[in-house]
Image (cartoon, rainbow, N blue to C red; front, side, top):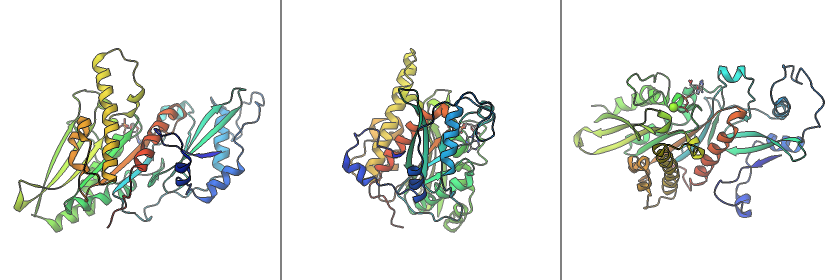
Length: 370
Ligand code: ADP
Ligand code: MG
């Protein structure tokens, strides 16, 4: 009942299927065979669920997911795990439920059994009303569960990129996902606001972590650092614009030329892809630009993965701003896809994962030589 997810834009060719062989933990595959995901017929109204909880909306699906989880072997990522160098890395982070979701007894449809693996348990119903779970399996470079701290996320995502800017490269870290999925929480506050609350995010950590400082020290009074920030739209609603923070490194003896650059990008909410209900022309134009920029971003990362000379950065404002991030042997990119845990967000979560899965497919031969 676990199926490999297919790329969003291509029909499922047999060759693609073969190549995308599952590398899931053997227990996952085993359990999927053991698990019959078709529910038994409704057994009357029960006040208490099988797991001792008071009944909730979609209780049957809740029980099916819990049953499935019992068969999973969970090995969470730990700080001592090996960090693999990648030119392009694609990771996913699941946020915890918020208070409102807990009150509403929302169902958690996302499981993260181990390093890089993520499962979405999508509730489905057959025409005869039989309920079943469509368990979809994804593999990323790293997957962070709801208990992961910003420190852990930083360690496996932005931190490995820091050295590259001292080596004269471009490092870019993207937060991608639906509004409310944790992009700003991960990146560290509003880059453009006056009162930045960035004490814990990647933005703060990239500045404050010992590696960063010690590298700066060993390279000091040779380099100067310059920070710039901005957003791609004047819209006050930050979920409708991409916020970008850039740290430029200049060598003191060549102050006019840039040595390296670190870009942190808090992308606009990707739910705009389906947001066509508005009649307001400027909103529609903005939605089109957001969609175009997210598509362009995918294409530019593809060019980077292929070491292509042609980078389609002119396609959008975002990629124009980030133009030099996609050029050169020393460029490194990390995309962190954020997902909400709840059933109510399932469709958005699947969109986010499909996009990120596609970016991962475009990585090409992107293993770094370091
Ligand atoms: P986005 O920027 O994607 O719209 P936010 O970062 O603003 O989402 O997150 C939405 C809410 O969820 C915020 O209140 C934030 O503090 C909380 N949140 C997000 N991710 C986490 C997390 N990993 N742990 C705890 N709270 C989180
Ligand atoms: Mg935000």
